[in-house]
Image 1 (cartoon, rainbow, N blue to C red):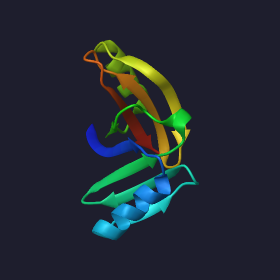
Image 2 (cartoon, helix red, strand yellow):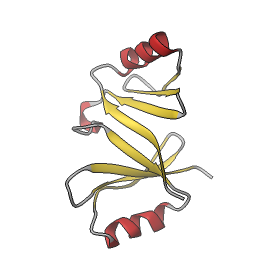
Image 3 (tube, rainbow, N blue to C red):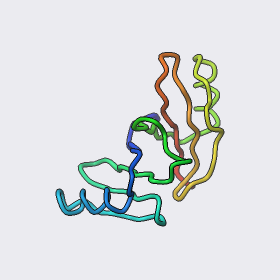
Length: 112
């Protein structure tokens, strides 16, 4: 199973981004410290990253899978370049990759 279910955005203030979506649309906000906030609404979760050393240069679409290792192998076999090896984050593990056209995306797997 592969489906896009998350998008992460760089932000100058994760808290302010979360507050905006809460006030504007009534979406649920979950802060994960001062530099990261999740916003859930309309069937999607949005993440806002304000730590400069963790930000991507553009929005990062994230693909959910049940098997992170198999997804990493499939990305490499198809010509993708892993830009960030698998790492843990609240809720699961993920890795980042660049597809041959140059866009960076991520694949994640929830904690079992």
